[in-house]
Length: 153
Image (cartoon, rainbow, N blue to C red; front, side, top):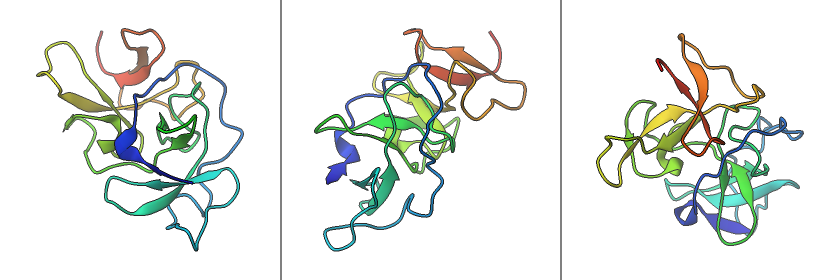
């Protein structure tokens, strides 16, 4: 199945258990298509750069997959994948979560211009993801389910 990241509904992230499936395998990010399907537990997804890439499946109960990539819900259907990442750096402006680099999530905070956000390092509130570094801690967003690494209160 080929799914476009341009149809990302939203990043619903909640604390949950660690992935049983590793997103680090050799198929993650590999090119795919009708004559080169992805292996079991992977989906062929159109990345923001327009290429078709294999991305490992994940569950909606995770903010971050075991390799640090964001678990994103895609439309159509109930598919969620460990997204390989976009090209917007942590700390830079973004408009959707698919734009952020590997490990990044796009969050819209108070004071951000309408429709704009910033890429932050994502984390799981239960500590099952890549640890926050540089004195930052994993904190919940306003919805109480999403986690991101933040320095300060």
